[in-house]
Image 1 (cartoon, one colour):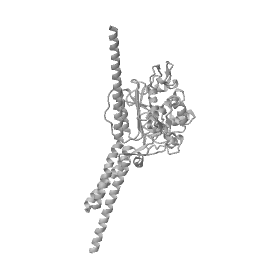
Image 2 (tube, rainbow, N blue to C red):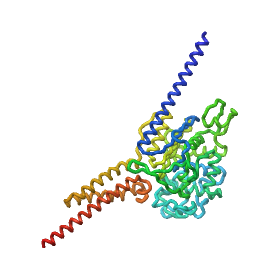
Image 3 (cartoon, one colour):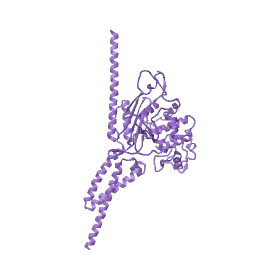
Image 4 (cartoon, rainbow, N blue to C red):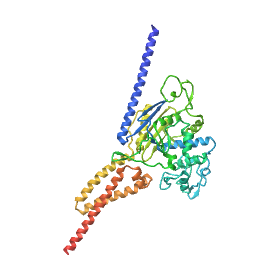
Length: 477
């Protein structure tokens, strides 16, 4: 009788615990769904895919098969290739990169300086992301041709002294991979990194695949298709394509300790499905264990950057990606065995980062906060207002007759236009043409065009008024 009571209590306890876990999971899932819906409403992004890795269990939100450009998340793949070649004794991290790129030179304060492979990996080479100072490759350029074009340029800081995020560093690493391996970057990455790691849905550059989600660009609270050609010599720093299925696997690789127990309990998580033998199966191929460990060992304190990864607060490691048509983010905590990746087809990096961080907090049990508005979303809203006000001003210019009013309108608009044209390139570290026609929402160009039209309209009316006044004087004379 006593044993029956004990069994009954145990069964009830198990049911309660199972019900609590199920409710907690459902609650998390609902919260994540809400975050994704809020994200779509905020950004107007039409395609967003999310993967959550939680202690071996993988959950997808959105289509896990859709292929997105992953932007600078590509750097971690390039960095891992360098680590693998270093393990094989083919790269010395402390060697001058001219050992691997013959004839390459860099100068600081007009004196030739050495840039080490480690400087590139840590983003401490002295290069910046300024297109004006260090132009990216033209279409059709090979990595070697692009490297020749920037060889001998003056650095903004002495190598090894200051952190400055730059795509130049990882494109140079891509060339080092080519020269050391004797193979093209694409071939080496596909055969030596992606295939051995089982990343079947990750591609070096643009794949010929019907699953590709086309990139878009924001404008007037709408998104427009925005195709762009991927330049071959820019791929190592930011132009892989992948999906959340492979990003879930990528998180698993970085959170694995080399092996994982496999049972016969019929669980549906990806790792346990690999075998029914009930034995240990290696999650990460043996030749990658040392390269992976070395990357994590070099991320010691918050804000450290190494080999395509950054260390954030509380031991969380991650990286964001952004191109003119896409944005992405991946973060993971090896100790908690938790990771999240977000991929979307719109350049709204700050909001994408915010979504990823919030989903990660939900999975960690911290709860979510509000999504952050991206700078381009804010600018889109501002320049919608500028466009509307500009159109109304044009109507005012057509009917107003007082010269003083026309002069005030013209001067104010001219000052506003000049400030934008001067300050934006300084703020964003890019050329005005690049800002207006590649990165910013279409509403920025539209708003500035309306302002320019108002200035011209007011000026024409002022000139016509002057000519009319002169005519009247001549007629009276």
